[in-house]
Image (cartoon, rainbow, N blue to C red; front, side, top):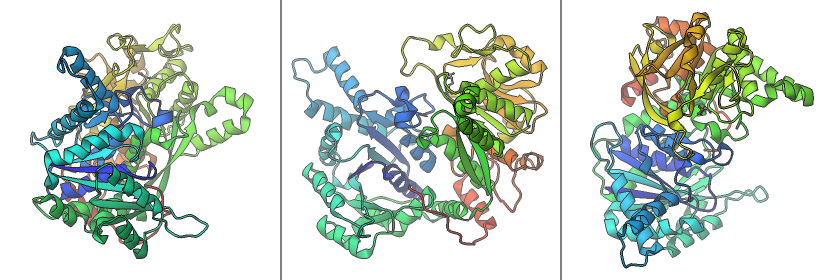
Length: 599
Ligand code: GLN
């Protein structure tokens, strides 16, 4: 096993996760089996109890693990399926050491950070690195380990010490260090500054780790003289300084790293046995980047949510829209609408806000109501679902987005005016959404209906069934405590709201579709967690296609885009290579710059 530790310096949030995933992607492109571990040095056991306001989205894995959103980067970049243990937190490490102590495993000994916590970290890493992530049962050969936070943080210290020891445990040939640092460019002088990087490398060395590669993150491309300065003051060769400036999209990062010979460096440094050259997979990423940069058709999707101030709260949803958009050669511009701005109470207090929110909603091509918790904003979401249903606007509801569509239909079509979810109004006489009792254990962490579950298509034909390639069953990831009340299904279906996908036992409603509407689809699961850049998620693809009026043609053609757009359906996009070939055939190579954005 080859280990690549990726640490960060100066400040967090400079794209360490994207760089680490890109490194992994490049090695995967050389035929190696790559896995990843994300370390979050906080005390929480997992991300399940986090507020999206503070930490962004809670990412959910197949096995039901509620983990840091960075694991989503790895799954998307490497097209792998990670395990809950691939996310290490200080809480998990301490929990495992303390439970061993209680069992008497350290009988007679004083249990200490060094060596007990640091040993537990090393053992965890060695164990988890071997878990297969590719669908076949083969163990990975390379493990990318991303250490969250920045070097010098108090809470990261036991991890840094663990890796200082680890480099000797696994030997130099099998371990290397990549340090991602910031090269700021203050406006006053316009000069790119290397001091913060120097200081952070000094700190890293002081803790016993030497960088093999320094990745300098900057706004503009790093000039050669600055690169030389980093090399000289940080005691590495120029070849070991990799520059990554702000790119138009994350898809440009792997090619940017490859252009600086990083693959060759890692091959030498870690004695890697490549199976092939990275060209083919890399080309497909270049095509993606190119498509992102040159696509000029823009559609707007209104995202009616609650955590809209923080884009990270909807990161997988946004990525899914991006993937679906790229497949259809259009750019999805997301309009974030605060759900409670659509409510009557806002009209009374802040009419301008209310009208602006409605203007945004009504002028968009499609509507998306994502998952969420808590009562605030639900009436606004219900109003958005009503508007989309009545005005035949494409609508995709995800989890809570399905539940509000059901509430709206019950109130306005079935005439049950006080219909609600038990989560928001336990006294309603029509609780159309009810709690799943087995998930109410009194504990908040890890007790929802979580992870991969099977949905069976009930009807012979349905829009989503076609979009999923005509499969009889699908597997998607879940995260919810409430469900559609099975008592009322007949009434809903008799009025045209069909529950076309259900759990294996038929009890849980998983997919609803509205008859006589161009695209009114809602799912109880979260399809965004398994969307991939070259394998867009079916419900999101449907929303984008319906929003550009191409859904019917797409379905009529057997779920294939026209050869000109060259994007095949999610089923037939078997390999990245095939997709690359398909995509490269169709793309017209015009260059058009879009404004740079942060990684
Ligand atoms: N709050 C709802 C539930 O627990 C929806 C959850 C979600 O959207 N993830 O069922």
